[in-house]
Image 1 (tube, rainbow, N blue to C red):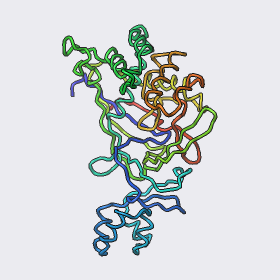
Image 2: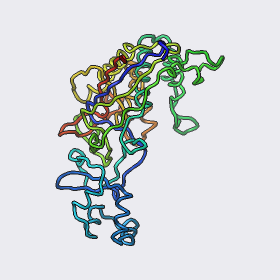
Image 3: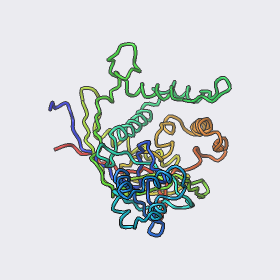
Image 4: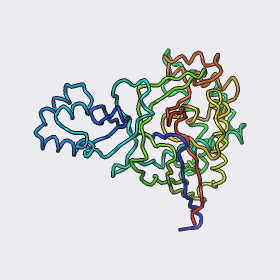
Length: 369
């Protein structure tokens, strides 16, 4: 391989549960919940259906799917299955002891993304997107004058057009900031914002190595307020448990982008430091972590945006509150400025008896030997 291609290994270690959604759900008739042991078993539905056919229970199963409202475990036992027979038909087993607060009925489980063999993994695009956000934030902090026009446009943007909320409020302004940071290649003259001019195409991050079913746990969505109050919601997610190590390959084409391992590490750390200072510390006091990056869904708005870097003080608070109020008009974000923080809930989950943020990982980048 040409020496202008720099190759690295990335290791992520989960510091809290991480959720990368597939967009699919496991409905309440596709998993078995044992309340006493607080465990969830997910059957191989093909094996289960063939076993049902072998027992001549297909009519009863069809009736159950169409009309019965009972959990799958109850139906299986009602037609003669034992616990051992049920568990033999399941290929995924997860602890759910932290996912049951105020959860008094079976609900669908948001599924973690799977590869072609059904194993959980993290797409390289998810990690690259998180790193890209950190790099943009870092450039904004180092070169604030470059973004003066974007900053003014963001502050002055009107979220209402012809009496209706703008559906993609501020998306154009954020694209302008990304273009100023990354679109430096001049591959397409006169069209700086064209994707061909994006130097990040010189950064390739592979999908992670496959993970194991035992790396998954169930996490419930829990929102934490400024007063310490918490709101546990009826949303369950398959998530990677704390302490899982995930491996990726990173390649940087130095003919396209002048980006180093140190650049990425510094950007990641500075993004975390600012986010913790201006937002997280208003809700919970946590020990500062090194090389920390947020990944996946359920982490909250602040981990996906550069608003806390682009703006400061009152303008930052007012703008984020305006964004939140446009997107979630019924959630009381019109009071965020008065309360001194926006959004006004920190996105968390219960894990091992503690309230923790979602999606925190430690990143390590090492040069390939």
